[in-house]
Length: 353
Image (cartoon, rainbow, N blue to C red; front, side, top):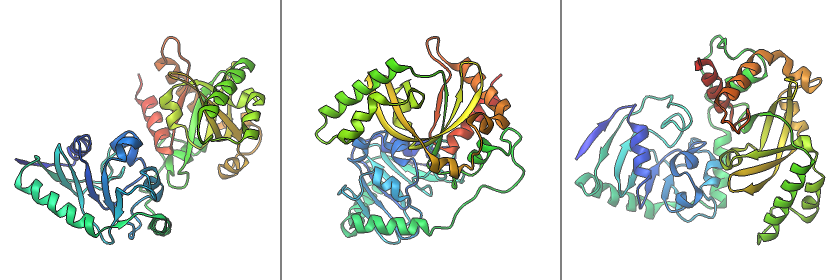
């Protein structure tokens, strides 16, 4: 049995295939977010055999690193591979869609119009595809350190795609949040964290103790002894505490903190992620350091209050939405791990009654 997949069906069909067992993907290009969207965890991704292309600049090398390069023997590459085959015990999808946000749609609907076909496991087409995959696999090259370096060079030289030009949406003004959401390529790797309230000295003490305990139990600690000693003395204003495990996993390495103080004043702060400590089953604390580098990238000047003042109206709407959607024992907060997630949040705010 086979069936045609239109551009609305490709997303779900690919996810269903990758959710099966014995996953094999001969897919040319892998984009930002592929691991999290398709496999959910690194452990599950490590069981899949993947062949990609590194020469055309369409594969994000940092996503390959998340998938295990250069030490994952199940990651290979073939020069000139342009196929998009997703194969598992659940069947097979042959499609035009790469494993990318634009092709499949990870955090937003795919921007490209794709199509494909689905085939059940055991069909003649499926059996022929299995044979073809093994032939390509045998001739493929290991994605070793040299290959990963070459991928980074190709990625840096790739043609840049920019959103269609036109007037800025009225919901995203020509201010800092508007620039972030409107230029995700320039600000790639920068997130935005919306927070309210503030940690106290007891929160710092509890987070430092949790961090020390976790590091002591690791064969290879993430922090040096001098860095561990810094945790109990951490500035309480630079500690984000009580966040969920999902938030902690998504926490960006560089982020703008949009903070609403106890009196309602909005401020902007620039941070680098330093360390994450688990307090209990679903409560984490994030140690962050002020980032002069990010402040310069975002061209922030003046006081934190001055920096946020031009967006008081938008920030007020965002925090009102977060207040309205928070649980009874929760507070207004959100992690936007990328500029695209920021844009999605603002879209949620605009759609709210």
